Length: 80
Image 1 (cartoon, one colour):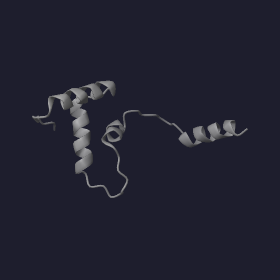
Image 2: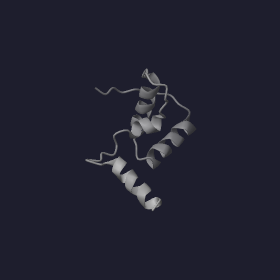
Image 3: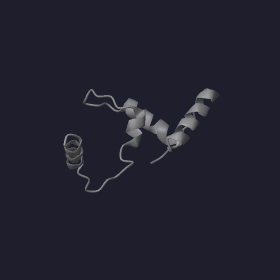
Image 4: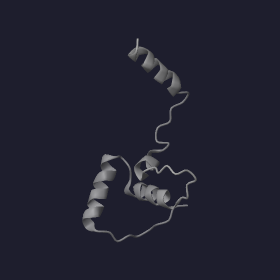
């Protein structure tokens, strides 16, 4: 369930964030939600994932994509 949240931020920060969101084709709300999710989740592993990477998770769905075969083919061509 989504809820509304009002924030007070520096105007220049808001403008830069809007520009960043536009350039990365993501809504400002989604960007802030991803950041807040990232900093509030307790992760078992010690690898930190940036909020941008977190927000991009699941954006592209590839059906039946065998990345190992693709990488093997790439290496075969590179070293043959």
